Length: 519
Image (cartoon, rainbow, N blue to C red; front, side, top):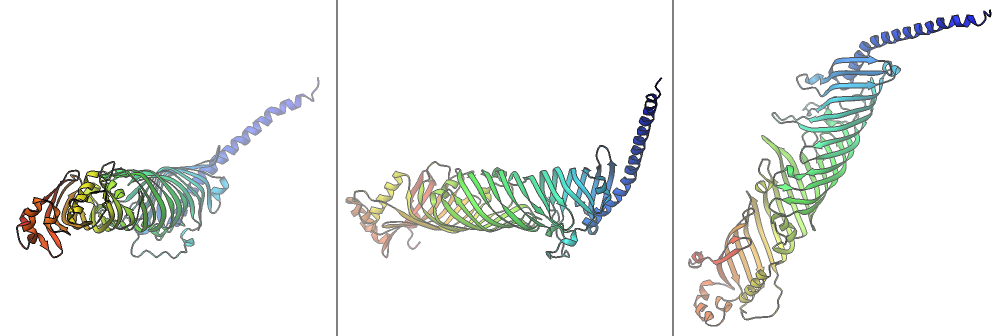
């Protein structure tokens, strides 16, 4: 019998048993290491976060698993600034899990490859009077102690708090947020997709944030670019349109410089027709309260250019923001502006437009037309009415005003118009509006209601000719005795009224004023 082959067979069970014992021992050692590492890691992570954010740190739960990969998970993380323990935490995390190498957990700084979080809330507190100014040196604000390659958060919430009592925070819902290169003395890169509250729409943005200013979060640096799509202007009562915007921003949270463009192909006020609206803007945004200061806006309504400067800012004691602008139109057309105000395929008037106005839209639930306030002047050059019947009547008025009621032939009638105007509560008031054609001038004061399209004006018709020269035949002889009554120097002055609707205006003699000398 060959004993040489039997010996190895007897050794196999011993080898298997030895391997099993070693594996069991390794598992016991790893479990022991993990159980010992958990409280150590919790203390180190808590201390690192406390130092990093100068905050009181609460961490309800943390555990470490080694197999099949090193993984740290936990929940109930809350960071509250040491100087504001009475406030809500600046960072809250419901649940988190992290992937890391074993040596990364035991090294200094603690290094984590990837962190996934849920129920993330970040609150940016307002700046206090004793907060330091932004010195530009933030390296000391992020001490060594913790380094993370990537943080991934879904359905996070950013709350910008305000120092104004009773003022609700500005809230942004973030659907996807990725932060990378989070470490000592360096900005972190980010990409995010979030919902803008008003106008409601989706923003995609990427850039760099930090280093975090633990002593004054509102002066933490930020820069990046964005695209804003499907912004529904119907969020604001009284207007409509879908806006798209893109641009770049840089600065600190409380003072962000933003430059970009907007495009709204179907901008509409509810009393008017849709028109294309494009803008290029340079603005400064206070990220802590959402107030926006428009350094310059260059816009185009259809083919009419305008420039604007002003602010969109909160009002003490009122919910919402007030819009204040100085608007200038030079080289525009009245038809483009009328399309905004009148719902008609063809504007009733065309001509060149120059305008300057102060614009105010206070906060409140009313629609834009009702809230809009204007105070300015306009001039329309070479205006022509698109209704041929109106143009014929103006031609007849021009000929009578020159004392040529029998004149015939084609003649182009253009008008110049100018006025000081105000608008409030949907009423446009003109004081006065001056309308001139060859041989005649109309001066009117009164109001026009944007919604009802009803008008009520009184004023004077100034004619170059005498009253008797505006008619022919026996009518001229009949009117001739009244020439002195209506003559004032070089002009015949006829008191008139204009009433009715925009589509069916009514012109009449103001008999009371006509029969009251010196009125």
